[in-house]
Length: 236
Image 1 (cartoon, rainbow, N blue to C red):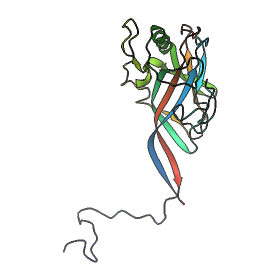
Image 2 (image 1 turned 90 degrees about the vertical axis):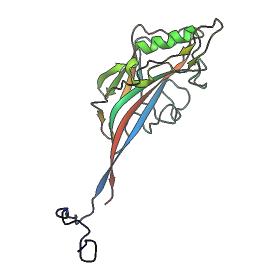
Image 3 (image 1 turned 60 degrees about the vertical axis):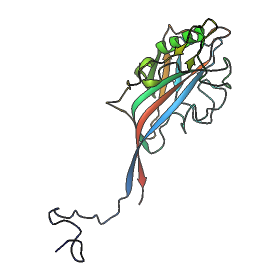
Image 4 (image 1 turned 120 degrees about the horizontal axis):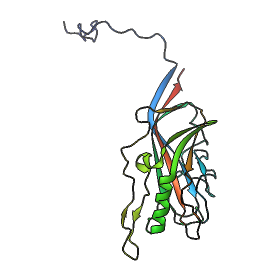
């Protein structure tokens, strides 16, 4: 007799026993997904010293002023809702980290535009010096853990923006570190529990070129965390 007719279960006779059905509804569900969290620091140029400095990222949330900016951070600079914290109830595992240097259109004021072309020898020298002297480190309240030199921070470690030709016809091309396949923590993610406090410190070595000088370019550094989140949805 074919199964599926009234009185015959919708399971093949060879499928084994029917699994038991729980008598109670589950009280919570786990929700998983991928998400990026990013934060940006602004360096104004015109006399700003970089050598041996420590600059804290992921401390200023969206809509507030900080991290070198005189205007409130917008969604392009960060998506943090609360400074220094993983969103409430969410466990976040970081499996990748990227860093990006971008030139700014106005040397002394962050009211300008970021990501403008890098088209002079002075600008190229400034950005490459910063990239090669910059290091990222975790800061967990009282513990600092070095991550990597900026040159290894994923695909974002280059000086981005097309390099235009100057009057002498030089300095053409594109600047990028070429490390798109290198991602920290791709094998062993860093776990950030829900409500944990953290930040990332952008540190410059003693040989980083100073931004001293009347026309030294301003720039910003955006650091992005790539990760998985897991949070609990209460349903009962």
